[in-house]
Length: 99
Image (cartoon, rainbow, N blue to C red; front, side, top):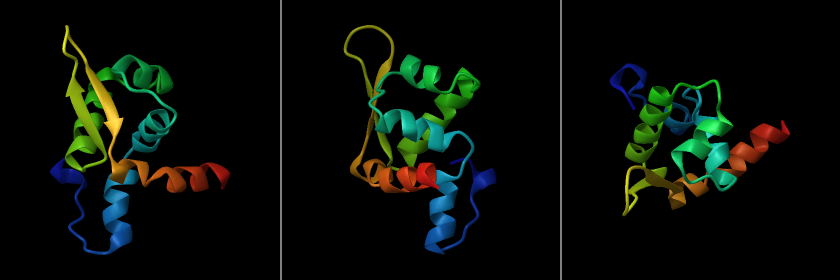
């Protein structure tokens, strides 16, 4: 997370909001939860999001421990996978969608 979005609070809700409530992050999580693993797939799921912002959000999500980014063995690109912590957000996303 960039320092301009860090609230510096210790309340679990505030800390969770720093990660989950950042613009576009729930959409990226939705795509990852639905099986997208490549940058192009994630971009297709959020067509109005710029490529540079998607890249930034993915790096922030990796830093927060929600995803792993693994460079592809051949050529350019990477694979994006949810960590256990990222997968634990599935009920949050489902509840938000249901609401």
